[in-house]
Image (cartoon, rainbow, N blue to C red):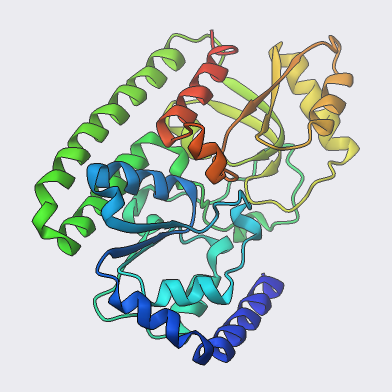
Length: 323
C-alpha cells in the first residue's frame, strides 16, 4: 500500500510539472460543449454507455483501462489526471486499488459542478470485506481485511449503481432526462432477467461449492446466489505462488466434493489449477475460467463484449458444474 501511494505522489508531481504545458489542450477542452465522462474500469463504462443509449456519441465517454490493464496495477498518467480535473462526471470503484483517486481529487482542483460517483458508496450497506476462507494462502491479518472492491460482479449491485449513474446523467443533461430514464428501465429489465437466470441455475443445482485455483474476486456473485467456495488467494491478493499446503487442501476438497472442475479467472495462468488437479485422486477434472471483467480491452468491446454478455458467459460456465 505504501508503494502504491508513493507512486501516486510521483504521478501527482508529474501532473503539476506538466500542467502549464497542457494549457492549450485544456483550452480546447473548454471549447468542447460535449459532456466529458470518465470511467476508470469496464463495468462502469459499459453501464454508462447503455444508459446514454442514442446519446452516447453526444458525449466524450472515456474508459481509462481500455488497454486491458488490471485495476490493481493501474496508476494514472499526467494526461489522465488532466482529463479527470476537467470532466463533468467521474466514475470509479473506490477500493484500495484506487487510492490514487484521493490524491488526485485532493491535489488538483476539479471543475465546478463536477459529479463524482464512487461505486462502493452507491451500493451502501451491500459493501463486503475481503473474506478469509479455510485453506487460503494470505499475508493479511484476518482482523484487518480491506473492503472487497469487485462490486460490479453482482447483477443486483449493477442495478443500484445504474440508478445512481442515471440520476447524475439526468442532472447534467436534463433535456434528455426522459431518454436516460427509459434506457434505465429497459436495462434494469435486462439485468432482472439475468438475475432470474442465475437464480434458476443455482436453485436447481445439487452442487453448491466451487473450487478456485486462483484469486477469488467473485464473492459478490456467489453470495447473491448462496454458492460456497474455496480458493487459493483472496480477490485482491498479490500472491501468485501457492504453498504445498494450499495445493493439497484444495485437492482434498475437490476429492471430498467430487468436484468436476476447478476454476481460474480470465487471462490467468492455469499452472496452479493443474497442480491441484494432479494432486487429486481422479486427476482428470476440467479447468474452467470465469471472467471478472478486470482486463477488458477496447478490442474486446469492438468485438461485442459488454457487461451482460460477459455475465451470461459466466452463467453458461457455471451451468457446466451447477447441475
